[in-house]
Image 1 (tube, rainbow, N blue to C red):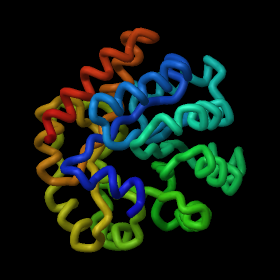
Image 2: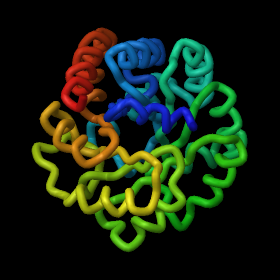
Image 3: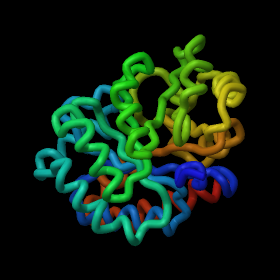
Image 4: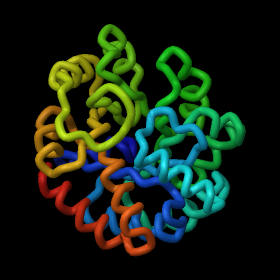
Length: 256
């Protein structure tokens, strides 16, 4: 069983996202340990990029702060290599195609595998163009995680059939960010995914309260939370770790 699949094996999974280097790489490392302790089952590490098209203002600002602080892909690899032996749960990178192109796709994937990552998510790569990344990931036994948006309709079955790791179901149109209500017909989307794959399915974009997490977890195998965590990092900066830990614990408790 892949490490990612294992993360979904014990009830509903809580997937936590942080932007690497916001407020600092040292803090990011401490956040990963704290979130794992608080019950996170899988962690998405965002590699900052200057034009993160899928992100709302919260994560965009975090990307800008991290880049301004001198964070590079190599520094992130070094951080992961250092903390990986201490982390039992799977970690995946979430970033943009350009980051891989600039670094060299194969070089990036090989290094990601070497430092202990389990997968990669590229929100700006449409299904039709995923092959050049997915094939390299497959060669290094790294899961290339596919996203399914509410607009995917006829493509959902097609995307699900080729899914690897887990399927990232986008709960609402537009960019990432905290939303007061989530209006998409999630149930229908997840049913379509489930009919075409046994790869676990997690819902993200817009989930921020325990109540939302609980509702969404009734449809899927897990929930993904990013902006609400990144907001705490922005608010408390270097002191954010205990606040994030408490928040993750409350979200995990809600979906149990």
